[in-house]
Image 1 (tube, rainbow, N blue to C red):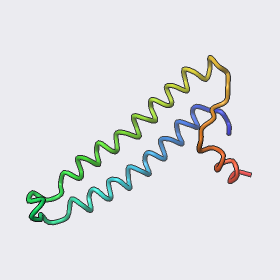
Image 2 (cartoon, rainbow, N blue to C red; image 1 turned 90 degrees about the horizontal axis):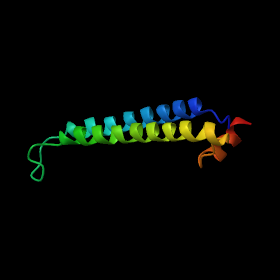
Image 3 (cartoon, one colour; image 1 turned 60 degrees about the vertical axis):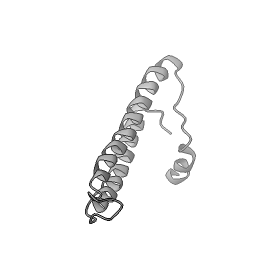
Length: 92
């Protein structure tokens, strides 16, 4: 919409924060479960797996922002992502 790498960065950061909260909520809910016959030590490892899933979107957004920061000034083109068309309809 605006072609700004800074706005793209902030949007991706906010989306990653929202997804982080959801993943951590699920992991902490699983972690409170009692041990079962199949999982004799309980579900505390769910928090560790959630930690890895939290790092993934942050790393992906960093790679995308760096990629766009390097390419955008050299190509002088607008940033076009697949999720922008629905957002354009909401902003009118």
